[in-house]
Image 1 (cartoon, rainbow, N blue to C red):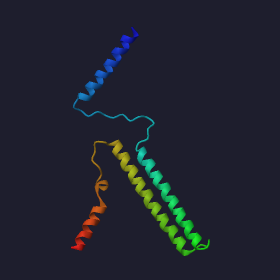
Image 2 (cartoon, rainbow, N blue to C red; image 1 turned 45 degrees about the horizontal axis):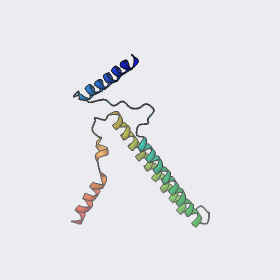
Image 3 (cartoon, helix red, strand yellow; image 1 turned 180 degrees about the horizontal axis):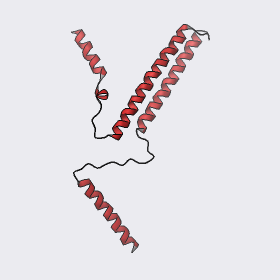
Image 4 (tube, rainbow, N blue to C red; image 1 turned 30 degrees about the vertical axis):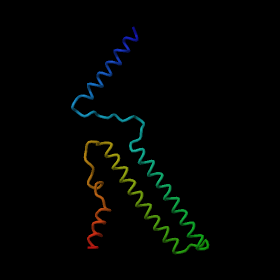
Length: 132
């Protein structure tokens, strides 16, 4: 008797799923609890940040070694450049993750005008115009 009841539950659930997928309205995706939104982006950006930090540290160490271990103006300038580069990276990281979260929260909305703008294409167009 228990297996018949189980069969009806399974068949009922399958029929409900089939009916729900055949309706013209869009199915709402239910996120898996505990799964991080934009996990791939976070992991990739974290990896990129570690690489950037290691590259900066190596360049700074090489600069100091070339300066004989003393504080040189060149090394201090390098450190400031690295600091501003890291700030730009972190700002870009924040924008990327915010865009990803926005897409996850509103999958049916269009992308923001900021994310669709390609700055490389406008620069290429300007440089092509200068060549003519």
